[in-house]
Amino acid sequence: MKSGIDTKAKLLFAACLLVATIAGAIWYLFSVSRYATYHVYTREPVSGLMADAPVEFHGIEVGKVESIRLVNAQTVDILVSIDKTAPVTAATVATITSRGLATRGFTGYVFIALENVGADSRQPVLRPGDRYPTIPDAPSKLVTLDTAISQLNDNFQAVTALLTSILDEQTIASLKQSAESLQKITQAMAEDTKRLEAIVANTERASHRFEPLMESTHETVIALQAQVLPESYRVLTDLDNLSTSLAAVTNRINRDPSILIRGTAAPSPGPGEKP
Image (cartoon, rainbow, N blue to C red; front, side):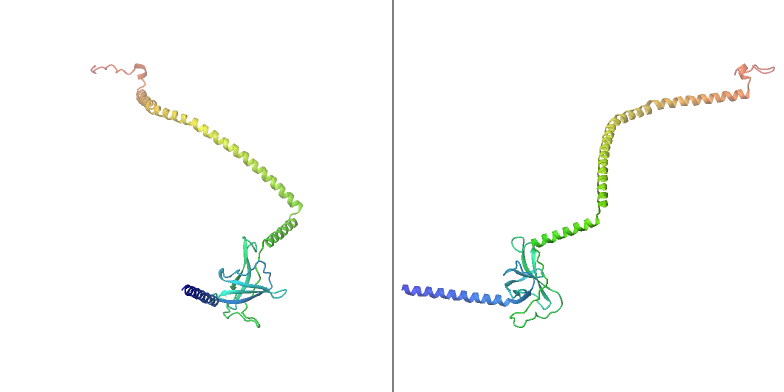
């Protein structure tokens, strides 16, 4: 009885193993059928490029590097697997590119970038003796940290040499003189700023003193309106009346100068006049 159970267990295990194997084979065949393999022959350095490195088409990952082998002293064969939905044609070129300054580590990695440089829609060429079609290569865009530092150093030396050839001793002396003049102007502006701050402070203090003066002036104006102006109006009125009286007396004197001798009393009645 026990041996029968063991036999069934073995058969069940074998069946599960067979199913898993078949499923794996189906998945592998399906995966393989989705991708096409291409050669990329290059004479450029491939430092940092490794198997399973991504292959991108216009920035979209469409495959990976399968293997890298040295064909001869000048040529490297890179085998890439690319999704069949990617628009790879005879106009497609492959560029070995680094993202970041380093070819290894956390600051960057090397990958293959694909792009179309024409309108040729035919399939890539299959070279004689090759198993897979070939994608032509383009000049690589590998920028390592050493290369970047070297280029920076070269550029700095070139700029230094250019400045040395342009700036003679007289020009340098003129620049120094201009710098000294600019420093003097800056110091003068700083002193003027301090003076301006002092003027503003004095003006602020004067404004505090000017406020009581304005209040007293306002009170004086009110007093003038309430007391001085009415009294002045009465005096002017009296002077006007007096001027009118004097004008009347002057007219009477002009008409009858004898008034100055006999006064303004009425004359005695003459003969036949009633008193």
